[in-house]
Length: 343
Image (cartoon, rainbow, N blue to C red):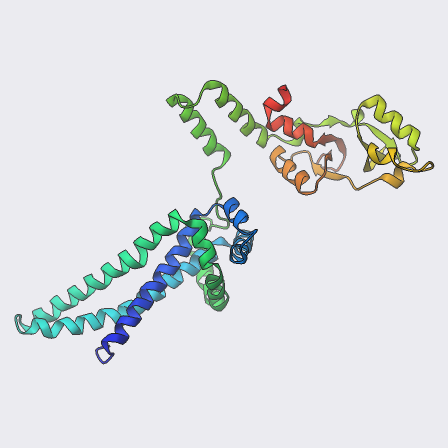
């Protein structure tokens, strides 16, 4: 590489260190980013939407592939830096040292100095500094690097799949399962330990500790512990007229009723619609689809599904599909928010 001009060597050195810094930023920002902040930024930023879309795809497919992409990029930049910059520095220093040192010693010293100089620049400018910036500015870093990183992944996806597959097989040979999803946030167990530690340290009083632990325990409980038994469900048959619908609502105090066909729930209706309907309207005319979930579904997961589907009612069935009861959005909120239930 001694035949390269100093300006070209300098330009290539800056380029390779910049590429290394870019991939380091992607790697650490991916781990440190808080998705809810990225979702907020996505409302006004197209780049943020690209980053959020990429994160969702990665979490569904293989987050390890994206991490492998950053490692692949860092490795390429490091190899290129070693093949261009280090020899150039070596050949620049060697003539300066030959006058004061024996040729063999001058060669060894210039080689060592070149290695130290290039390694220092690479570690400090190409890795440590961008790492610190990415951790402290994760959301901004993800947004800035989203589009170029996506292009890199599209271009190098085939070799990355090969390398990643080989790495996964090596892990399985020693009994380790490859990483399939990026952990997000703290799990319930970690939060519980944090709460207990805070209470022991005196920074959290016992009452608040009990409230948080109650919520954590409720999140993991199955729907079967929060349901209304099937025989107590407020319901009307498909052919129920308006008078009967209003009578059931008045007797039970419920505004949302389950519609049944020969005793089997087939939908739901809201009494508000019955009040504005024309005479002759039946329950079947007002019926809307009714959500159904297995009894073992965790309360927190059921709440997310019901909120996404904007459903206030949900049937609960056992593993064989038999009806065991019904839960409402209010029931789940009362489970997760003890103070709300007490009020």
